[in-house]
Image (cartoon, rainbow, N blue to C red):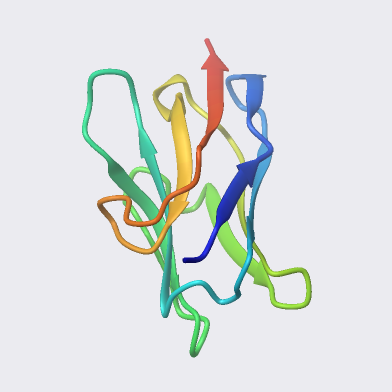
Length: 114
């Protein structure tokens, strides 16, 4: 079973940036590689995902134009660059093999202050 370890979260002000990383024991860890998030009291929300075969990327409307998903095959790592962050981006962020969190790691906390 593939192991995923997320990192890079933290506390930022509105308008700030963070880069999340997802280190995988096997890479790509799935044909479709997701970043999802979960705010307190809410369900998982997919943020972005990538087709590992051809690099096609997809973004939720809420993050389009602000977030960028990328990968480094040599480092076996999936990234999420988050710019122009908003308080509503506050959540626990996971990488996963599906939009509902299959195979996710422990997550990394992101807090965006007003």
